[in-house]
Each structure stands twice: as structure tokens, then as C-alpha cells.
Image (cartoon, rainbow, N blue to C red):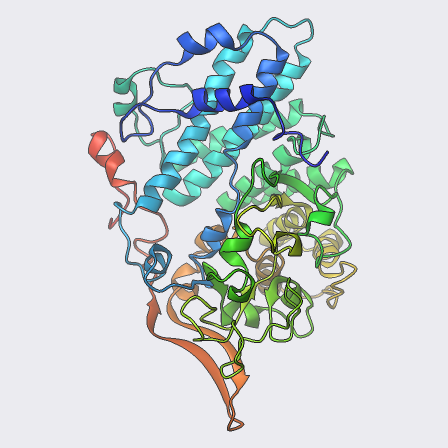
Length: 509
């Protein structure tokens, strides 16, 4: 079965409502007690706990991860008057709906986990092992949500109970980021010790996911030894390996392969996403892609690196409908730049995750979205060791495993390079290997390179004009702006500030 987390009885949907419906108020930290209802209909047996945990999996990020890359140097919002373009220009503030939505959705997920943990003990079971594992699964999800929140907002409330009064929400404080990181590390250490090496069913969280998130969290903090150790723990499990084909890694036919450590599972007609509608070229669905790749990501690939054509539609590529992609000005195709304001503005389109099976119904996609994969773990291990200046054979092996995938076969990185050279290599490798997977924003924030990389003019493909000259597509009058004193963190949503007198705003917002 493709997905054991979705195709469940209607009771799971009811519980999802019980866990997420909030009162008519604006502050996500304000809640109403739901135990009076749920105790009558839920928490009676292990099946209830299973369905409750399934509902929590839905709080994992899905196609939303594309929006994080859309705020960086590798993607551009295709419609210049959209909110996403405003973020690129630095023209957003604490009142932007998207900022509030991020905060709200992550804290809804956290509250759902807290509610689960407070009620699962009601169940009387002869063998508590299954319940303990379910608890470890949802705690790992909560740790993931906290990693996202702290990277986006910095100091945030650390909430470990499902608050039962409005007053509790209004008295919440922003905990220092260091406390959030300590909590995340402790949680993932404990859940890694509890979770099985192999999940009981497809799509569920196993030990490797906890270790991999622990590695990511420590890498983000600059805890190099801890990051390397956690990544190595994943490597030593023996459960994961690189899929032989990067080109086909993100297709339906290869879902749930051994490279996938954590993903969000979808199912057509039941629990779908609209990724094809949002990202595929205009000619494939008569609507514009929300984001298009930039010249920056095109230039990042080494010569003859096939991951470029696997990840991005370039002129000459075959489209899902069988046509040849040609966005060149004057080509006369539907994808021609300036053919319509909905066609690509830069000449490129995202290819990763675009499946021909979704052509007929682009708003009803069932492709799973990968959140953590083994390639990232290898690169995390390598980066952490490089930053510790312990550049040994294991570091070269980790990088070269990624570069020498069967259908990539990029030149090997050899010994003898300086720490500075290796740092440049690993950062570029993370960029091209993990492009459009939602990690670029956080990488550049932690490297403190965003003010340089995320600012300036937006450029696209270079093409040969009719007169024989070479021209590069530029978005006239559009300038990306990243203020280093301000934009390394999002603002705390203004509604949260208005409702909670204990909240302080992030600098310069």
C-alpha cells in the first residue's frame, strides 16, 4: 500500500478536527479544553491512538517547503505583484498573512502533539510498547515543528502542554532560542532511543528520522561534533542508501525508496496536493508557475552535472505532454517568455517533482514530499567534519557518494584541499543536490551569507537572439532586498503581539 497514514476510517478525520479546531480568537496559543468531548469518544483503545497519531502527521510540511526556497537566490516569484515577490523585495511586515499562517500552523501541530501526549495514557493496553512508539513518533514531529519555528522566528514560546485557558495563552513568553534547541535535542535523543530501526508501516517515523533531525538541528546551531555523531548514527543503521537515479528519485514510481528518511505522504483523490498546478510550465496547465529558477541556481551546477537537467526544465527538454520545452523569446510556444505574464519570466521551470501522471488533473497530485533524505545526512556529516577541520577519508567518502550517484557521476573530490576549499565545495553541493527542497533559506541564514546572496537584480536564462548576439533575461525594475539587521528572522505576527503583552518584537520590525 502506498500510504498507511491516509486511507483510514472517518474517525481519524473527526479527531483531526478535535485536535485543531480553535476558538474564535486570533492567538494560536489561546485554546479551549477539548478533553470533555474526546474522553467520551476517544482514548479507549490502541486504534484510537493510531488514528490520533495519523492526524498529527498532517502537520508536517508539504509543498510549503518550496516557498522557503522562493525567498532565496535560487527561485523567483513569477508574478511580480504577489506576496511572494514582496518578500523578495523586503516589502513585508508583521501584518503579512503568510507570516501569521506559518506561526499558526506550526503551533497547531505542536498543540495536537501535546494533546496526544496528555491523553494517550488513558488507554489501558496489555502491551504499552505500541503506545510508547506512537508517542515517540509524534514527539519527533513536534521537534521538527520547533526546528522550523526557531529558524524562522528565533526566540519563541516553548509550549509542552495543551493550554486550557485563554489566560495561559496570553501569559506565554518567548523562550530563548537556546532553550528551544536544548528541548529539541533532548526530545530527539529520547525518541531515537525508543523508535524502531524499521517503521511498522510505510510512511511512519523510525529511528533514522529522529537521528537525522538531531543532526540537522545541531548543524543549524553549529554544534559540529553533535551533528556529525547524529549523522553517523543514521549512516550506521544500515537502513538507508542513495537511490541509484537522481533523475527518478522524485517520481511516483520510486516513492518510499531507501533514500527517504522522512516525507509527507499524499494520495490522489483522498489527501492530495496541487504541486503540478503550482510549479509545472504554463503550457502544461494554462496557469503560471508560482516560482521559477534563477540564473544563480543554473550557474551553481558544475559543467556537465546532470542534476541540472534533472531538476530544471531547460530548452529542449521533453515536457509531460510530450512537447519540447522552448521558452526562448521568439519561439512562438506557450512557454515563450512574455507570451503571457503567467509563463516563466526567467526561461526556466522547476522539473523536480513534476510527474506526467499529474498532467490530466494538476490540482490532484499524490506525490509524496520528501523532508529528509539520506543525501542530506551524508552532506551534514561532511560539513560538520569540515567545520571541525577533521577532513579525513570519511568526509571525502560522504561527499563522493552523493556526487558519484549512478546517474550523476560528477568528478570525485580528492584529498589535499584546504578547509576553506572544502567549505566552498560542501556548500555548493548542498545547494545543487538539495535545490527546491526547502533548505536553502535556513542554510544561508546560518552561514550568514543571505545579505550577499539574496540581494540584487534577478536574472534568468542566456539565449542567442536573432541577430546572433547573446542576451540574458533580466527582470527590469525588480530588485531583491535583504536587510542583514532585520531579515535573518521573520517578525513575530502582529496579532500575536497585540494579544500578548509579554511578547517583544524581533529587531527592526
